[in-house]
Image (cartoon, rainbow, N blue to C red):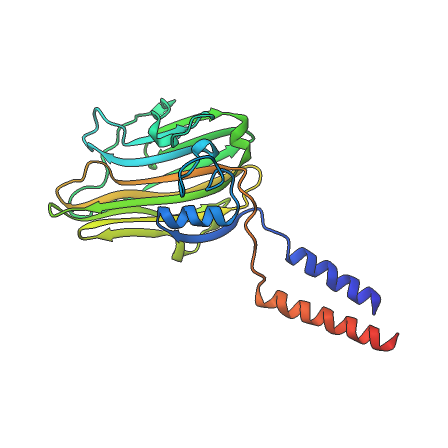
Length: 273
């Protein structure tokens, strides 16, 4: 019986171990995202000497981004891997994107009429080196990389989309879909499109507790109806944060059942003692 209890305890401890990557899901807009980070006690999120609710961006190490820009293929940055160099206190996307080793900083997205032309991307970490690639089966549109010890400390990713529509832009859609981390799919419920008719929508899907090398893959595009938006009115980012405290895992029902079985076994032993 004692051997049985030890076995149960071992299984229970294993099932309660935090996974290398925890898919938290869609936590909502930027304010909700900041609240979520502060709930973890994340350094720099409401814990820094900055205005209430503000974010200390020294903990955001890098961010691949796609934005509508001027969507002409010239003179603007529609694609980029942006990085922060602490102690900067601005988001990485406020800095110029890294010059690509292959491809271009310009890309003509989707198009009027909601063409929904999805393109593939990969975000990869190997030790302290980050590489971002946006490509199709025929060509690499953009590829850039950098190496920094802080990149090895990144343990949380936020997949963010922003779509804004006006009277002349009747619908806008920012898409991040078919998301996977190390080949494991992020459930369809957390791969999201934003489609609106007036106003703006922002969403953040979080993957936490990331450890070691990883590869994130997916598909993305920007689409609209009416007049094309400009600048960052239609955009997506993958925001990478370092040194975020571990998010907790809520036990599955099977874990609760195992806990009950263990307690019952302990009760039997106590009665026999």
